[in-house]
Image (cartoon, rainbow, N blue to C red; front, side, top):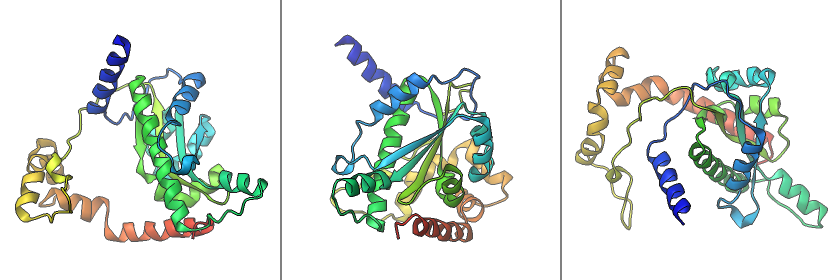
Length: 256
């Protein structure tokens, strides 16, 4: 009982103090440990108990070098001991059903959404377990920015779509915690409540006043923190272009 309580406090502490790790030590990530974490993560929620996900484990330097451009050459892709690509996967279930006299019909966007949800739940559970075990990781949202390159490189078949990537290893840094919005920014009771100028000022006040964010505004030569995200980092043009690529990849993989 004591050990269980200690473990729960450890997990809670890891969750509340989690940070993205982009620098890793040379210590390898044991495959036995990796498999244990993946098996434990399988206990996460899943639609119809179908487990509509797969994960591709990349360890070789050659494959990491090939994956790097898919993630805009972020250095942790080649420096991390392990790179994990989590995929929405209806290929396995479809193959199983066809071999068991079933009549699968999962070549549609709803099925992609279900599988993507499953894959992201599995990914998040794995991340929590890995961090509780002392490993460090970084979630790469770039996976869905250039999915066709990843599909080709990892030989993903029809009805398999990459949705998330993490770099994994033993931490070699201890970066400061990043800020989070207050609960009032995300909680809505009974119905969605409109965001007013007053509520926006309240919820973003601490974030905008942070010295590191004010410096960020200064060095980017803009007036507000919001402009960095809308006008520099995630522009309308880029978002629309990458959306088109994502839709093309979904069609290519048979989900649309």
